[in-house]
Amino acid sequence: MEPITLATSLATIVGLMGTYRSERRANESADLDDFLRWLSDHGFQELTAELERNTQLSVSIRALLRERTDVLLAQLGRLDQMLSALAAHVEVLGPLAQAVRPEEQLSDQAVSVLQQLESKESKGFLVSEALNRPPILLSLDGEGQIDYQEHRFLEDDLQTLVGLGLLRLDYNSQGGSLYLATRAGSRFLQSVKAEF
Image 1 (cartoon, helix red, strand yellow):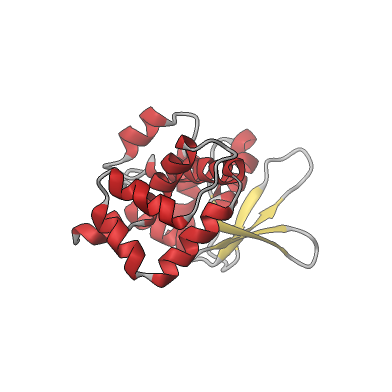
Image 2 (cartoon, rainbow, N blue to C red):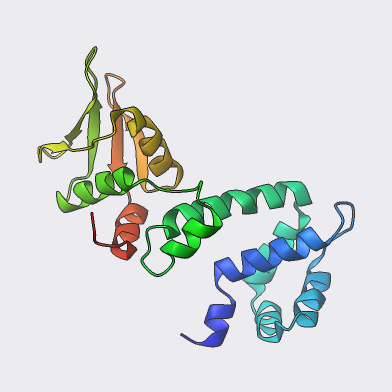
């Protein structure tokens, strides 16, 4: 991968914007020209040149710079949480993600649910609930059940998967919860450790 491609990745730009904004006082204005000067002063000349060439990128950065600092930093914090949860299961990045944000983990059970869904090539599953029994996750394609062990954390795991965009929540005509496969979930599984 070319250095400019690495330098202009979303994570790099978002991280630099977060650093730039956190260095500024909340009431200090931030504009594209000031951000470009800041980038150049901090040794990011290639990225500065790319931002000056790429109109769409410049427009996007300008819009983000107009956001209130507290709003932008809160959104960047949420993005950091999501990336940490995902990176914890990527072989090379896992130890770093777990060291930096041990509280932001995508559980092994959540990954297992995704992997079973993928291995069955199912479009999703229905959560079937009966009184005084743990829910059953039934494949929508008639491919059997999705197994899980920690019943008390199932809802938490499913909410996390939906929040990360790895599953999509929908409802059937009776109001039952349907969890549908997403491309993001499938791509995520291609990058995780194959140890489950």
